[in-house]
Amino acid sequence: MEPELQRRVQRYGWDRASASYESFWAEQLRPAQDLLLRLAGIRPGERVIELASGTGLVTFRIAEQLAGTGHLVATDISQKMVDVVRSRAEREGIPVDARRMDAEALDFPDGSFDVALCALGLMYCPDPPTAMREMHRVLVPGGRAAAAVWGARRNCGWAEIFPIVERRVASDVCPLFFQLGTGDAMAETFRFAGFDDVRSERLDVILRYATAEDAIGAAFAGGPVALAYSRFDDQTRDGAHREYLESIASYQRGDGYEIPGEYVVTVATRR
Figure 1 (cartoon, rainbow, N blue to C red):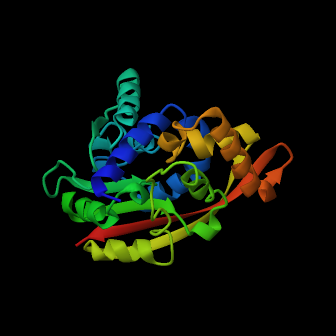
Figure 2 (figure 1 turned 180 degrees about the vertical axis):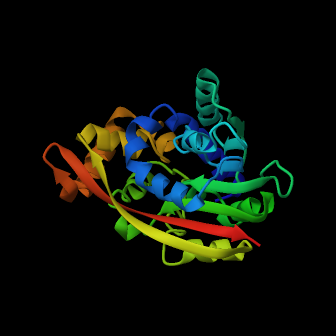
């Protein structure tokens, strides 16, 4: 896929998902975010940039750690995601500079930040190594980068969502979605981008949904296939929903679902 096309798919897809994202994913993503923030070790007074900030699930936790000191920039390719962060920051008086920005072309001078983070966003970049090199560039020497991605496909029970959608409409979404989470790919890519002291941790989780409707909403409306899903007519949606529920049937527990997942979280230091 052409990089520019993939960027447009991501931008407008996440615009679509912005209204549903938190309701379906806030709790499910929290274990990865907890580990990411622990490994990043943000301290008051530091200058922090977050890539692919989404609706601010990590952003506002960073703001708490900074406690009104330092400087926090939240970036995302989706304007609607940025608007959600900006609106909450203004409403609650939280010092966050929210900007629409491509993770592969950060509009900041070299050495602008002490910490760069990306929580579950690098999988969506057309060229993740470029995004990592940008993280490296905007950090001061000794600055820290930390990122989380989904793990290996075989360890993510919801992974059939991609072929299910692709069979109905060309989604152009994340052709290599699980690549960074496979083997040592995440750590090796950070090293390739110029980082030292690279270390990764894997985290097994269970994604819990109380109803089939919640599981469907998370997979289709609140995630990366939201743009493709918006093109479905009612009959196509019903068929896709049935097929997805069949793919996760072994994880059904009563009326709900407990779906396995895996995260990889990596922290590294700029030379």
